[in-house]
Image (tube, rainbow, N blue to C red; front, side, top):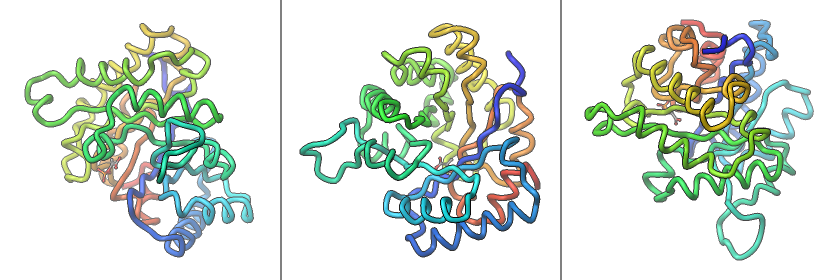
Length: 262
Ligand code: PEP
C-alpha cells in the first residue's frame, strides 16, 4: 500500500443529534482554544466537526470571525437540489454555508431511515455536484463479521456508493469504515481489524479506478475511537483518520484524539 505521508489525516467529529446552537458555539470555541494551546498544526492533521444542520450557521460565523482552520460539514444531504422534498436539506444550501464535508450513508441513517447503497450513491453525487466532499460511511454488522464476511460486505457497499463517480471526484472522496458493532458500543475494532478492511477498501479503489486514486483517498476508521485507542489505530498504514461520535462531544477529549494522545 502507498505510504500515508501523501495523505493528510482527517479527524472528524460526528456530533449526531447533540449540541444545540448555543452549546455548539461554546464547543467550537473551546476546541479552538484547546488546539491553539497545544500549538496544533492543522496542516498536518485536518480537523472537522459535523454538527446538526441547525448549528451550521453558528459554526460558520465563528470559523469566519476567528479565521479558524477548522473544517465543518453536515451529517446528511438530500439527493435532490430543490423542490417538493419536505424536510430535506439541499447540497446548495450546505455549499452556501461553507461546508467542506457531508457524511452520507452513516449506519444510523441506513438503519433508521432505510438508506440503501443506491440512495447513498445519489447523495454522494449530489454533494460532489456542489463541490462538497462526501464522507461515505460503510461497514458491516455483527452477524456479517461473525460469518467472516466483513471484507466482501463492505466492498459491496463501496462499489454501490461509487457508481458513476468519475476518477477526478473519486480521488477527493473520504471513506469511513465503521463496523456497526463498534459504533457507540465502546467495543473498538482491533487495529488489525481496522487495517484489514481499510486496506481492502484502498485495494478496491485501485481496481475501480487506479493506483493514483487509491493513494489519494483518505480512509477513516470509526467506532468507539477515544484518546486511549487512537494512536494504535492511526499507526495502521491504510487508516488515514477517524470518524468519532461520542468522544467528539468533549472538546478536550476530541483535541487529544486529534493529536493522537492518550
Ligand atoms: C459515529 O457516529 O460515526 C461513531 C463512530 O460513533 P462512536 O465514536 O460513538 O462509536
